[in-house]
Structures are given as structure tokens and as C-alpha cells.
Image (cartoon, rainbow, N blue to C red):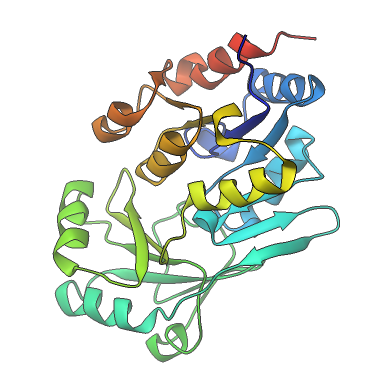
Length: 262
């Protein structure tokens, strides 16, 4: 019988809900999976600075974990960055703002937060940011670039990303007008492949669960890729299965298929 040797879990919309909280039933299911011997790896678009407290809550303190959509691989504790991939954000920022000057721009500061052109809508980026000049945003290599337009739709951003014809980077559009941009070839699947190789686990033995467009490569790469019911149609289409919605603990339902309560 197949059973996951490695479980890769997205955070927002998969484990984490309103109020930046993980439901207690999900915490228990994740801990039971780890207690049963599975390697449980967080694979998130978040930076490490906003991932660490969830790793603590879940009791997954040894890592490794995939953050910044695969650009930063972290072990903890103590914090150790195993891999870090960067790119020059300047050309992309210039092209985006030439098309949509009203967009907000954020560049990740690894382990600290973000440098932003102006504040994001409340609650979207977290409290760890500094407003800086455009020159500062483009002055050094970055692991992650975020483009946001609160007045646009995710469909508009899908079109924008395609029209920009960006080269030398990877990108994904969120469930709002939120564009995540990473170094070329970097995504959650690439990060997880590195993690799995280090642990001696084949992709065929990986269970991955996610709900966003930035999970597509991960769900395709894993031996079993499961999308939540709220995932966009293109995410559900490539998944091996679709579990229930977050409000009905869809992630927990999938985990309990393989790992019983202890």
C-alpha cells in the first residue's frame, strides 16, 4: 500500500485560515503525520519571518522547509539557510510600473520582512515592512518580488503577467491581483525536489497539498498532489484529487486518509 514518506503543505488557505491561525484539528493531524514517521515540510510563498511561528505551532522545528516560493530553504533551530536563490528585480519592476504605475511593489528581506513602495492593504503582508524609495527596491538582488494592485482582479493580473513576457524569472498569480515573482526555475517543486533528495525520498512518495496557483508545480511534481476545493480551476485540473474546502478541514481529511489519530 502506498503511504507518503514526505508531506508538503502550503500554509495560507491550506493550513492557515482567518486571523493567521491554524485550526487545532489541523495541528493535531500534522503532528500525527510527523509522529508516524513522515517528513513534514512547509512549502509556502511566505518569507521565513512569517513562517517560523507556524513551524513552532506545528512542532516541526527541525526542518527543512521551503519558503519564498522555493527561493529560500531553511532549517531551524537554529535558523540555517541551506539554499538561497536571487535575481535582479529592477527590470521587472520597471516593466510592470510602465504598464501599471499604480501597483504596489514589495521586495523580500530574507528573515526580516519586506521593503515596499507603499503599504499594502491591511493584513496582507504582515507588520514587518519598511517603506523605501524605488531606487532602494531595485538596488540589490532579491529572492522574491511581489506586485499588488488592490483595484484590479486576479484575471487582470493573469493577463498582465502573460503580456509582460518576463524572461529570467518565474511567476505566479494569487487569488487576488497579486503577482509573485522569483528567480528563473524557482518554485515550490524545485525547492521540494532539493529537500526530498537530501532526505532520500522519491517524488513518487510525496503527498503535497495546496490551494493556489503557486502550488501548481508542486502538485504536479508530487506522487500525490491534492488541491483544496477553493483552488482556482486550473489548480484543481492538474491535481490528482480535490479535497473539501478549508472551512470543512479539507487538509485534515486528506491527512487522515494516511495518518490515523494517535
